[in-house]
Length: 198
Ligand SMILES: C[S@@+](CC[C@H](N)C(=O)[O-])C[C@H]1O[C@@H](n2cnc3c(N)ncnc32)[C@H](O)[C@@H]1O
Image (cartoon, rainbow, N blue to C red; front, side):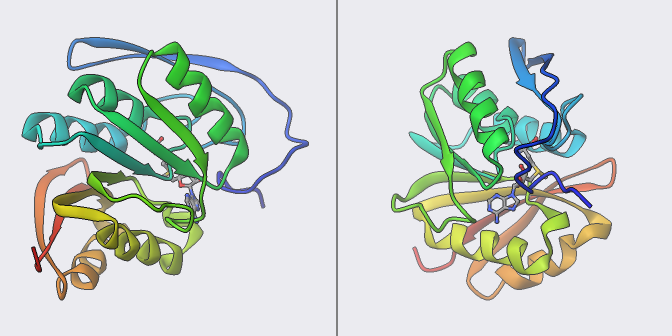
């Protein structure tokens, strides 16, 4: 079975455009077969973006892990007026994210990284709608490695369905971070974590 994170070069391309207004700012996203939430903005991703915008964290550069075609990283980069690094393992998603970065005129770059394996920088803000279907091992790696890539006072924000591991994600991060549920919306939890030792 094909997943949204598998690379299938033979999958027929059927480009489409998703237009979406976030916080009064219009965006246009090119999407395609073989990427997550290809026809509409994901409800969880939207809840995450809205929560981050409302909170307006101090940030110069953010990282979006599992960026897909780029909705989270691109909308936050534009609205918070910051630069963004965006990573995924799905090459088609990375290609689309780079098209969308250009079309929406944000200062960002999308590239390949399995979790944060190709990330050397540290960030003020790391955001992710993690790939639940890739399994708990991958999700846990993304969350734990994200904490290691935060600047002092940096924050990890993520969204996860209540019934798809929100509680266990909180337990995982608790020993080394302050974890807070920021918002509960339509079965999704938006969660923030900050390292304890800064
Ligand atoms: C739930 S989707 C979110 C996509 C996008 N951020 C959005 O909001 O539409 C999770 C993304 O993680 C990517 N992914 C899967 N396994 C990954 C891994 N090991 N490292 C990085 N990204 C991964 C998938 O390809 C997918 O694009």
